[in-house]
Length: 462
Ligand SMILES: *Cc1c(COP(=O)(O)O)cnc(C)c1O
Image (cartoon, rainbow, N blue to C red; front, side, top):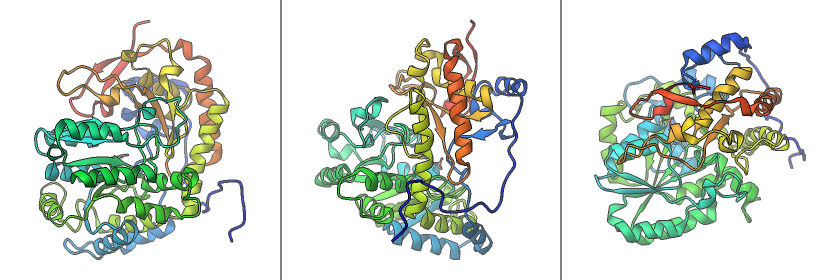
């Protein structure tokens, strides 16, 4: 029996530290202007607490660092590849593995292998890179997430669930032959880190099986999703996160993974599939885009660290502390009356910029403006997840106007302390108090693809 404790205290202690520097407001004002009011374009040296993303920003364990030394750098047939393959098979149950440099490398491969021009790919809400690869392959994304996912005030526990009626309607409209797969994310990033329930996933499996449609699993945050099932879905409290993860994977036909999130590495990803012919074709394509099929754009040491990180990510104490820290920040903001997406998600706290800045129209980019303002206040770096991220409609060329206009405070794994979370909460509260003075932005440069990464802005004339 583990001793009972109410706190989510971290199951590790700190062995190495990296200094942080707080800059002056003047320096920050210059930095954000030079960055075109886009937090992606800031230099990290000008940032104090970096909550831009939880992608590739985790702290590795001493075991993982030791793994880097053990990596086998053979061009072909690396021992580290076979270690990773063994872990993926044992922990996730997928038969075939193709490493890629990160998640989008795997998304490119699976989209090219499975999507034909004119196909429709239903998904539980879009993800930026996933949708672009589907479109580049000639497909169209169709949203089948439950309506609650688009409502930041809904307290529904499983906002990542698929609306089965929406999926059935799509199948009736286009025919199963036009739907190569359902793209299913655990947890749903764009909805605020919201989980899908096992009950819903089982139902999606039954429906897709009846129509001969695959499920391709975006398993980037599958351990966090499994933890939410353990916490909140009736009948699963006694099961380990590892067990639940294995069952989730068993209900799908293949997966794309960005190992930069749950799997606790700074770079890496993979494509996994249970289908021999899909594996054959993807294995043939990977040599064009990534590298040989036993390294896929990664060093042997990266695959070694990933194999170890996957095991660590499935530890119940680890995931409880990781998500516990996110909940700590979220609860603090809720108590302070700050409008945030609820329930609090697993990888970050999402500020509801529409409610935060109700005086700004959506085409004044409220979430982008709020992220810039937070940086100015304290050197805190957050990310826009709203109209800028949603991009333009590929047919009409107009802005997409997503229901959710959010600023994401994303918590890297095993990096910051509870005191850092307090600093973040204080900064958000200060900006909230002077929210009426925030003017909004206009876009001065717009890239063609994934514009949120490189777009530039300036303050709207006052
Ligand atoms: C990060 C992410 C991706 C893309 O992975 P990269 O490693 O950034 O290429 C895909 N899906 C989800 C849900 C993600 O969070």
